[in-house]
Image (cartoon, rainbow over all chains, first blue to last red; front, side, top):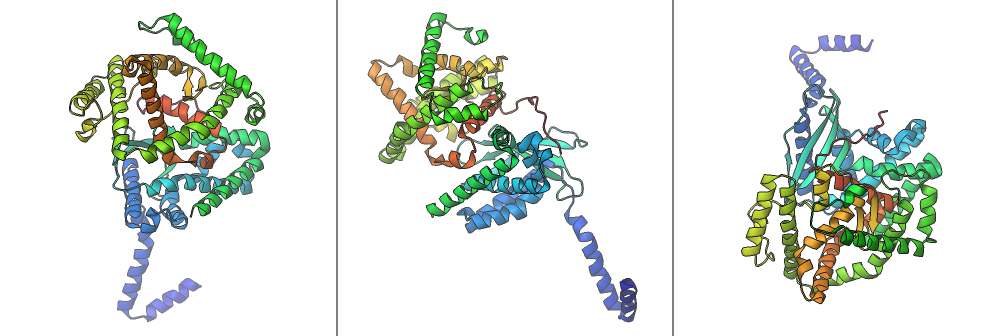
Amino acid sequence: MNLMISTIKHLEMKSGKTLAALGVALALLFAPFAHAADLAPDEFIKTLCNSLLESVKTDKNLKSGDPERIRQVVDTQVLPNVNFQRMTASAVGPQWRSATDEQKAKLQEQFKILLMHTYSGALTQIRDQTVTVKPLRSDPQDKEVLVKTEVKGGGEPIQLDYRLEKTPGVGMGWKIYNLNVLGVWLVDTYRTQFSQEINAKGIDGLIATLTDRNQSNGNTQSAKK
Amino acid sequence: MQAALRFPTTLSRKRLALVLAGVLSVLIGVSTAHAQAPSQIQAQTQSTTVNPKDPFESFNRSVFEFNDRLDQSITKPIAQTYVKVTPDLVQTGVRNFFGNLSDMWSTVNNALQLKPASTAESLARVGVNTILGLGGVIDWATKMDLNKHPEDFGQTLGYWGMGSGPYLVLPLLGPSTLRDTGAMALDLKTSPVSRVRPAENRYELTALNLVDKRAKYLDLGDQLNEVALDRYSFVRDVFLQKRRSEVFDGDPPEEDDPELSQ
């Protein structure tokens, strides 16, 4: 019905206008595809890191550690390229399967806040660092790859590696699901602690502990100001 | 366990056994002294199953607690004062001086691990810094793009296939493993600091080294309290992972890790 009306309207329009409208529609139709070209895994990391470094260097609020701004950048630039559900699931361990959807959502949210608190400090340390992506050792068919990088600038180079999963047609074609800082895998570091909490107090206990911790972290942060 | 005691060196077994016995007796003393500490009770309820990497967990937890108190009451305040009263230039000089000593030992261990490029670069660092850098106080080598390749004897043992053994928290010195504790005896013994006479100067140097090491981490502040749910297992898991990564030069083989896929 709508289609018919619009077709009729189109026919009524002058031909010039019709063409223009058609052009805009086409552009809109193809824009997402043009934008979301799947990159090679190393290109993906390079693009992501450089855009983040660029944001921090040019954005004063971000550099000074403004929590609200950090949250924005994490939500818009980082999280779309991260499979955070998988990260949380992996940190929680086998118990993840028995969690309800609501519990899963809460776990993800609280884990995200905890990690952002940890890494917001690192963002304020960024000055003139550069990221070098090491040569990739993987097959084009690989669905999961390891990308190794080195952050240089000020002191010894820092090893920063990423585990990626292929997400064809989504985002830049890859999502991060684990991160290695100086030889230590982020998700693995929380696994034992999470399972301790779950064994002692169940999934809701873990959620409560995470929420408490995030709240007291927030308090100390506002106290410092 | 036995392999940890088989050193390809001149260090006599008797001597090593004495050192280990000393360390163990201190550990036991500390653990009984704090047997009633709350963290101890917590530890027992928390770990119903024994972590294969940390069979001495409750024991380690009490040393961890002890170290923590020692740090809060003594080590940290000293390090804070040191940072406050000592000119930056002197602090850098101190750090470089000890860095140069560890570069020397790294050279030997890189050689023991048959890494010619790293051995040569470490040796070049020592040469440049000792001669041009006034005995290591000025770090010219880093400015010349000669990179550090830190290796200690524990890493050398790991390189040749020795497992790390159980996790150990040492009084004052913190996280270690059985292999690394044994190896550290050699690290300390071969250090030029151990040949300084008279003994008072040697103790002073050792204390300065420890204070400098602690000062390095002052900036981290209380971040550990904020990121960790359980500080003990957080530190342990980070330490063991990092140590393993160092042994394999940042490229460790995958552990048997049944990663959960949803």
